[in-house]
Length: 209
Image (cartoon, rainbow, N blue to C red; front, side, top):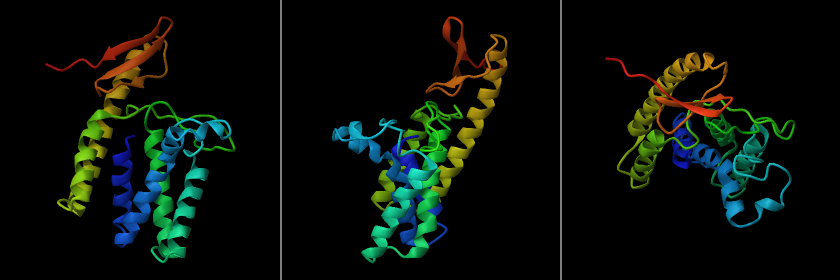
């Protein structure tokens, strides 16, 4: 999922607390993507296996540790309170959940297992999500949008996810005719990829009428 959607879902979680709860949850929701910065700096390649984006930092354990470390740093500087830790942890786990829902997979249980898990519901960075999350994040930063906008985005994300799930179920029925049990999303919600002996076959959900 895109970076701005992670921030927005983090802020949604933080709405259950005070303003700094939003900060704690949004910060922790963004931290797993620290791997991108490390990769750009040329540092990540020196780390252990899974040194790729959506690798080491994208597990329930490492993301929780990052959230706890960030909260502790905030507590030591007087910005956060210990009560903000649950919001930070929830924000971190929301990142793992959202990326799990996309294609490509993440090592959910690393370091216990390096196996990647993926629900293959959303595209890696889904354009129909990003097109809403980026301008909304900008509006929030400029303080021209607030709580209602965050809630509206969350409802949009749920509705879009439900539509994608409905399309995926249709695609899975089509995949059965090719003896395939999985389908993969594309940027278009009505277009899916079905694995076959000849490679990936594009399948478009037929329109009604």
